[in-house]
Length: 264
Image (cartoon, rainbow, N blue to C red; front, side, top):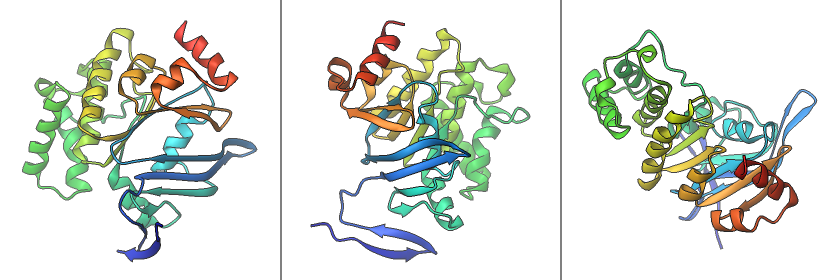
């Protein structure tokens, strides 16, 4: 039986359990925006190194769920535990979790007045207290990882959308997080740029990075996901491995969604 006790580390509540503890655990999470309930009693467990792909119709709560995992949104009820730290109102807990969780958005959110290299160095220097030299070495390493080392001295406006998104992925990697969250990372891209970003994400998945990806790119999902999550109206309707999810979805809502998206 798994005994659990709370201890304090640097002011943060650490939930300490035996090994095999999930890396991300949502239990009964609910979230409202005014009168609108965006998340309804959502529970999800992601183990270290697992790749979860979240899909569902627009407004189903997908983005809200992953934004709650790094506290870009505050959940009203239930619990979220990330790498043994409970996300609550304590600033200490929030900052510990954010150091471990990287996020890649639809829009690239790069600083337009900084070069690619400067964009990548900013976080490690400010948040991780790296020296300029170490931060530059790390930035160059991750630009290699996303296959655009030659773009280091350019400004974001000089890059294509696909290149900018790969810079955004490299910027998250420069913080060396344990978990990467992707919020529809290809939805703002022209069709011919989507595959270059998905290829980089597939390579990342092979390195053992824990990933939660909100996307409608079902080919990518089949290839990369350990688990598919279908959301609708703020609820997790179905969770299944890709082969089961695509070949034999249980719920009518999921069947309808897949029919629309796969025959689109």
